[in-house]
Length: 302
Ligand code: RIB
Image (cartoon, rainbow, N blue to C red):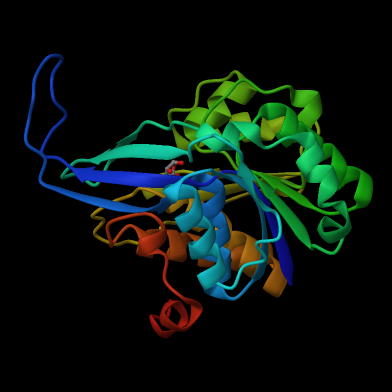
């Protein structure tokens, strides 16, 4: 199986805090760590750790961060022929603050990610055509995301769109995707409906399916994940753990869903397995650092 991820990469600057500072206040953080992140890269790394052959199409910075992101992809055995450098531009970075309840606040500075263009997608066409799936998020220019969706539809390569971070989207430009995977906030924005409960998530996702999106998967954090298709809907319950850092859990879900869906062809198996992989990622600090390899994941059982 070969999966293409067309998306972002960042260097995560992860600070554990006891509480958020007030305006004008300085507080002491509990600990600091640096790691590889970015929603695109995170999803790609989860797939690679599970055993997928991953083609990464991204733009790294023309700096030490960009070089180390490239090396990280290489060490994971990913196809890095389309890890492009944005000349004279710094790498994307993400200061992240995690509180004692395991919740996070993230600022992204996109840097080189802003330079991934539709032409970069076209230049990779010969290799994208060999992929079984294209996975997209919203940390690169929207015109590139729309172009990749249209390219996937034209060439018969299935597309998963994770509309994160939340943004206003052109529904016509996204409706051909095979899987649309928002969280509650992202779903509410695109459906223009409130999403404060599982029932509201179901109604909003159903509205999108009625407007033409084939499969909507809503990631609901501690409430699990909801699958809504033309045939019906099903809530897949969460896998219960004690979280220490939820950063990147959505990315772990999408990476593992992509892998297990292609491996088994079974939506229910992919949903259940992705719930478990994402939950386990929250039991360790960091983003990519918390994504375990397939052997360890399968050893842990269900
Ligand atoms: O989804 C988590 C990711 O969001 C972090 O790794 C950070 O880089 C931001 O892109």
